[in-house]
Figure 1: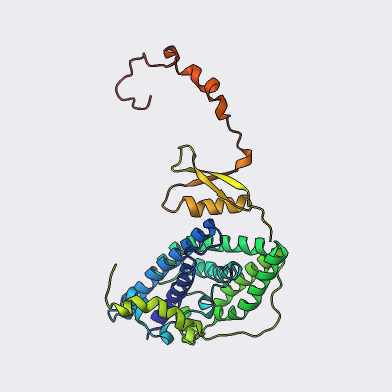
Figure 2 (figure 1 turned 180 degrees about the horizontal axis):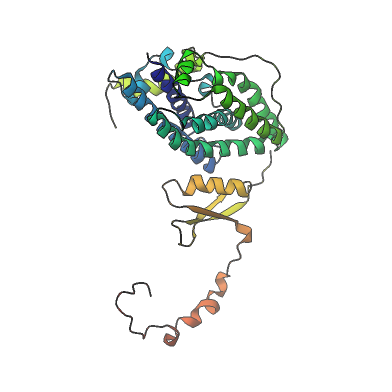
Length: 249
Length: 95
């Protein structure tokens, strides 16, 4: 499996799985405007997944297109980061998950625009516009929930305490990254992480939230080692295509 | 749990540069920043516009419907108030 294919799959699966999670809010949002906002975000992410997985299929060259990759792989073949498969929980948990993710994606796409790979650079440029809005939306909510009522503050602090352990998996790297870095296709993850840390620190300060001090971290998404959640997600995601092979809308 | 509702905002969208903002509806939001974001999500889903104005409903001063008679009828029955007796040259479509 080429390093480029592996890398695109990682990006594409992040968008696919998080897009799926956000789509679970459809009809269940706490208020109308946020129901629409979250499903808009889901649509943006699914659009990114489409572009990325279609391109991955091209790079692989074995006749798999975006749909086949999205719906027919086995659980350990998905390489999304652990954060995106975590359950939605309450509105604050969804917002916190989105915020930690967006703060990572924005600098990632910004730098990916300069990729030596033209297709990746084009996808990054388009996705960056969406990601900037997602980040603004989630950051504004983190601030309002954190610096809000006693209840909202307590809930979102809980969400942060639960999700923080998955943040280091966002910055996991291995030979795939080393190879692509040497080819000028991706940027150095330490730069992306540095920006993430600044964004996160500033927003949490304004939100009066405490970053958990225990160092426990959970990793493995990029190696296909997922949490228990993945099985349930795939059961829903893949059901139609597996029950009715080759079905189309 | 508080039973207070978020304030109501009136939303105006400008569809193209140079045109006026049109009223498209209202929504509830906690503050001005959220109002614009919510308006973007609710009212610009299908490329309806390039600019959003949000005004708190309480700041909109509206005419009293019971006064509609005295405000608007006088101009209805006076044909000499309307500029309809000019010959408009060809080529001017929006007069």
